[in-house]
Image (cartoon, rainbow over all chains, first blue to last red; front, side, top):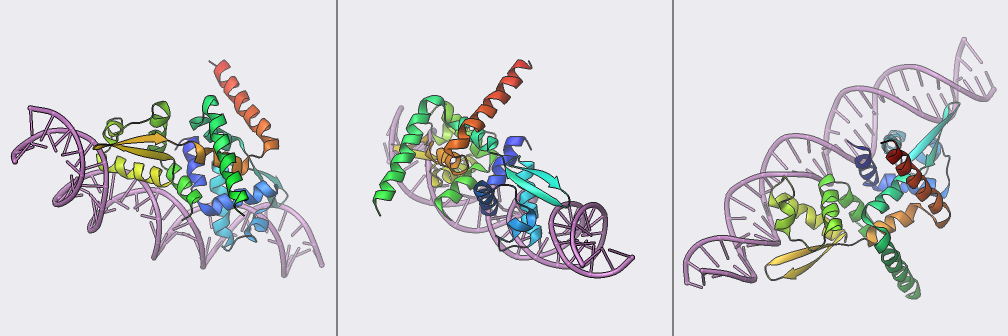
Length: 107
Length: 107
DNA sequence: TTGACATGTGACCATTCGGTCACCTATTTT
DNA sequence: AAAATAGGTGACCGAATGGTCACATGTCAA
């Protein structure tokens, strides 16, 4: 399996996307800390973190017996660049902003 | 399953990503035309296109007995916006460009 | 209107994936 | 040193996924 494949497989699971959300909000957390945010055993979370790490979406640093987890945004950017070229980028982001605007004025 | 889930599930398969690549290169193709680019039965391709359509990554228009397929970049842009904020965007794209530059100068 | 063409449905099967558990190692604390 | 803490491995099982086929509908051309 190539690098790119790993990224898409990693993003396919809702638990793993939630882990990325947690790290996006605050970096450098340990497995145990992340586990406490999820209704799942430590082993499940560990397996998911492993997948994210293999995909290079999460990078880690050991500190004693702890392992700190950090979000790496580069693979996400590459997904964007694959199907949105420089010419259509303005359109796409404009549509996204328009949609967001319409939804907030609904409230 | 929510809309976002469908997008990530859809992107998880290499055949579906290749279909997006084909449509990114040239829009408005029929099922039969796309099928000819793949080593898979028509039914397999149809199933994949259905998944992409449910995820809103591909939109279609009927024309007689043909069904034309178009790429929709909006969901891709939303993925980008979820984990790359305005402040780190410059960093991420800079890293991507740097990596591309290093790889091309290698040759 | 008959036949060819383009697309569609439901069932089926092999493989992959998500999650848990028993068991294990390494580091810190008391 | 002993106990507690943080992380890790391999096997296992139910559920979801990828791909194919028999069969069916709608559209176009001769």
